[in-house]
Length: 167
Length: 167
DNA sequence: CTTCATGCAAACTGTTTGCAGAGAC
DNA sequence: GTCTCTGCAAACAGTTTGCATGAAG
Image (cartoon, rainbow over all chains, first blue to last red; front, side, top):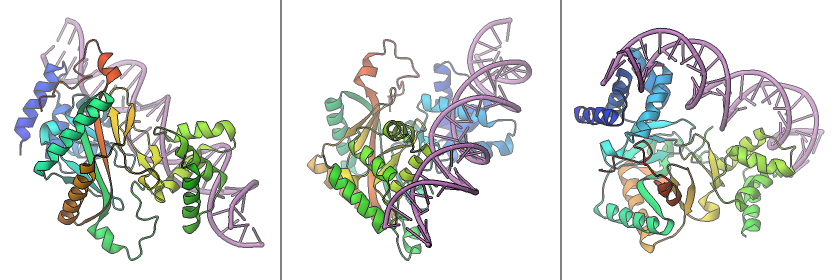
């Protein structure tokens, strides 16, 4: 995909901000560029570890922190207590998340209705004025039940259908 | 405020789902009803601890889990790795969050533009159809810089502010 | 050659669990 | 009286930190 392009951008960003371009940094950006989903630190570590067992988990964390700081990636917690990561909109364009409260499946939602940007734009301006906030980004999450979970549940107890359930 | 009403509701919810109504449970619901902001478990513990030092942190966690399970409260992580809680929309009506990326201040945003519900409603239906999702809830978060942080930064280091706002 | 980045191990911190005793119904 | 809830302490898991070594520029 846009791997080449993104990689170049990131190296520029590293350099422009006084950070060195190193193997772990390139690998992690590359992984996040090619992966689908929202891996957590350990998942990233395990995948990189296959080909580069010399790279430690600590480096993964430090690199992820750096990438967040440089706005290259976003950090999320969808409710399971794990920090999850994905390329930021700088690289991918806006998209949002649809999360199944039961199986914790996360779907990226990327359709852009023409009206949407208008609406969010206006909302952003309103809020910006009212609260004196320089808004730079937004997220929308939809919570619900995916088809599979919906059908696999004969009786939907109150307890089962909970968003953010960490059990 | 709506404390009485909410409390009654919650006790009903406890009972209907086979849970007992206990002091810690009532205290925690009451606290979350009256507090502004999005306290984490420890903050809740400390506040309750003042008057009820016999109630332990474990109970706080277990009660919060229960309340989430019963949809009485929502659990969030705004990026600092702490689980934070607030009454769910069942009790408070929809609202969303504006988060300062620097000082982590969180503002509840509650204005409802008439068009908004329409828009979200339509979006929800679209998504519901397209992804076969039974959507039950949504969240919107705006990220940015609050007035104070914005002005308190004489020199905006690259790392602090997004130098990549050329989206 | 200087300075930043890394790896390891150990520390930290928020959260969860096992178990015996206390409390709700 | 029964069965759930609670408190304590100890275990866990994800993440961070200190320090010596290694690599980037």
